[in-house]
Image 1 (cartoon, rainbow, N blue to C red):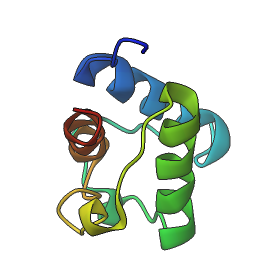
Image 2 (image 1 turned 180 degrees about the horizontal axis):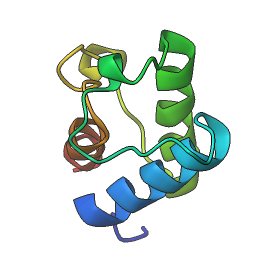
Image 3 (image 1 turned 45 degrees about the vertical axis):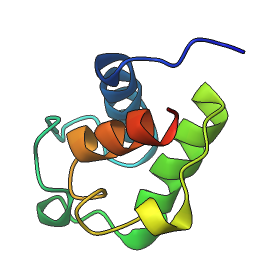
Length: 85
């Protein structure tokens, strides 16, 4: 079984992915920014979750896909670490 990545590793991966795949180069996003304030939509949120599941071979349950757990990059990372335990 592979080692579960820490929250900081997941945050960095999510920031990189979101900058490359969701936002344009001029957009600045920080781990604790509310994603609802960035204009991100539900499709993009699911893209982030799918990216995490594939990148780190973890599974996030549907029950964990709450507004609170998807509020920010940090919240998604925290949820992912909790889901992988």
